[in-house]
Structures are given as structure tokens and as C-alpha cells.
Length: 290
Image 1 (cartoon, one colour):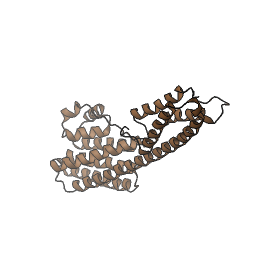
Image 2 (tube, rainbow, N blue to C red):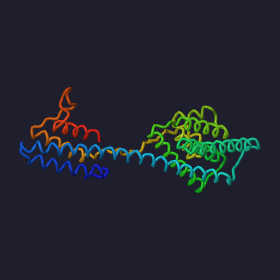
Image 3 (spheres, rainbow, N blue to C red):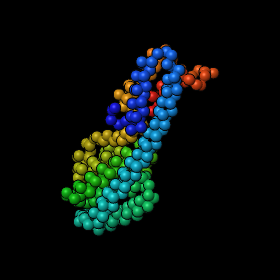
Image 4 (cartoon, helix red, strand yellow):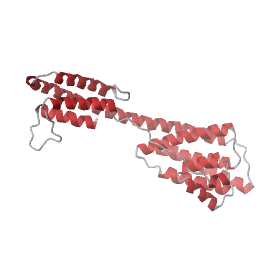
């Protein structure tokens, strides 16, 4: 069997293949007996499909929880790291404004993490990214900065992708981070036109933050930056059969029909809801549903 097929469906498919072989060798007189076998296979297939769906749902929940926990750790690490940085400021007022932004971000991060939700952790990550970008605008650099930044960005990207895949809103994260980068650029003396140039080429605020930090605040690079982000939602298996598994199942339907039994799809109004005709129709529908 192909990789990626849940164990329950692999077992069921094996049974269906065996049933197909049995039907292929059966005489017309054997079909009444095989009707009961097919009915049992339908019931088993339905159970296997339900179990696979439950398992997939559990896996999805665990996936976003793991992503949220990783993001939480990266945010805490990044914010601890920024406490020890030796930065450069144009004036005492510049430093005061930086410290005020930092204090406000720390309060916001604590509030968001205190919700103990994936969205709260994502929002906290946006503020931490803003803090790291602010520090970069004031001279932070080096291997440790790069490590902290890369860990923070990668865990944020993963959590955001998981959140989107689950249908969660990322609007607060996006708006907050966009505002963070605007403040960071303003603090370094960028004009409104230069700031708009960054967001024009990088509509995604996370990509805008990455461009700002990666280019070290270079106006020329930011003005010509083109967003290359390709965020993809992780594919979460929900019991879908592999192409080979689908082919095997469809072959079973073809073999059943070849014996002279025709499946109704859907069953016509008033059709008898028993016997092999119903069973075959249910298997046919089940193969498309699983």
C-alpha cells in the first residue's frame, strides 16, 4: 500500500481487494451470499473512515499546539536577549522613545501569552519581531542576533501557517506588525515615501520585517525589495487515500459492476434499501468520501 494511508484504511483496503478477487471468481448463484459480505465491508469501511477522521483532527490540534509552544519559547528567548544589547541612539530622546516602545511591547506580550491560545502566542510573536527589528535599527547585529532572529521568524511563520490552516484570524498580528515596522523605520529617520516603498514591495508585514532586518536598513535595498514569500499551509492528512489506494478501491467497484450488478448513485427514490445494490452504492460513495 502507498505511504500516508492510515492503518485502519490500509487494513480495510486489503479486505476490499480480497473481496474483489472473490467476486471475480464467483458464479451468479454466489452473489446472494456475497451480498452479506459486501454489507459487512461497507460497515467496516465506514468505521475505518470515521476513525481516520478523528485521528486527523487530533493530529491537527496537536500540530498547532506544538507550533504555539515553540513560538512562545522563541519569543521569551528573543525578548531576554534584547535586554543585554548595546545599542546606538541619536539622542537621549531617541533612546527614551525606544525604551518606551520596548516597555509597551513587553506588556502586550505578557497579555497575549497570558491568553494561552495560538492566536495570543502569534500576536506576542509579532510584538517580539517588532522589538528585534527596532534593535536592528539601533545597531544590533552579529551571530547571536541572527540566531535569535531566525528562530523567532521561523517559529512565527510556522504558527501563522498553522493558524491560517485552521481558519483562525491573523488580522491583529498583521496589523500590529505592520505598525511595528512603521515605528521602527520612523525611529531611524525614514521618510513616509520610503516606508511606503517597503510595504508596496512587501504587502505581507512579516516579509517586510524580514526585508528590513536582512538589508540592515539600506534604503536602496528596501526601495527595490520584491516580496518572495510563498507561505504554504501544511497539508494535514484527513484520511485521504493515496492515488494507488483510490485506484484499487475503484477497481473493486468495476469488478462488482462487471458481475452484472449496477450501483445506483444516488439511489433512486423508492429504491429498496437492502441487498447488494445498496451495498455497492455505499462502497462507491465511501471510496469518494474517505
